[in-house]
Length: 170
Image 1 (cartoon, rainbow, N blue to C red):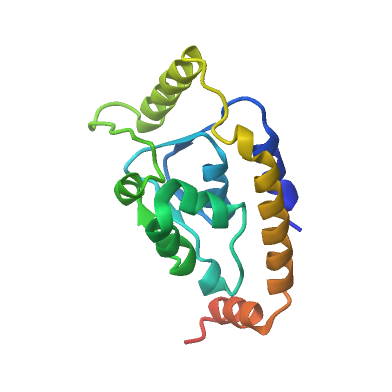
Image 2 (spheres, rainbow, N blue to C red):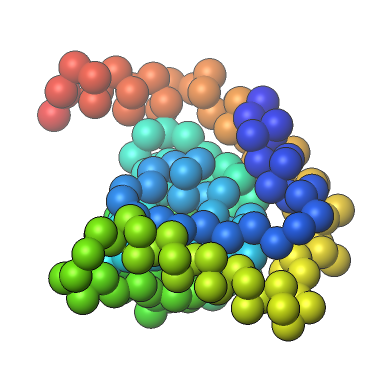
């Protein structure tokens, strides 16, 4: 089961923040909503192609996506596997802060600097984890999704989708 990947994000006691500056796919996308805030440059993209791969959602995304983006955002990303850009992610509520580089300097450093300012402001206001009261529920969702994913890997849908992509079947 892949539940061990997400367990530390669920149980980490201090606030966690994401600074996204490129493509995130699958678990790299789902784990972001186990964090407290997502900061992103316009270059970032977010994609959860579970259905296209013949597998099920992971990383508590069946809970966290709807919680953060509502039913429509969750449907677009989890059911349809839509790849969204940073501006769309901001509009849906997936991204909390869009960090523009204004064409000056190193965008990585600008994002890092903004993430540090954001984290310092968060902590100085005495804010903690946004998931603090949800740990038991997230654990249950993580285990359920992990079992569903493990079961999905042994289906013909998964192997057809995987082999079809690998062999470029139409």
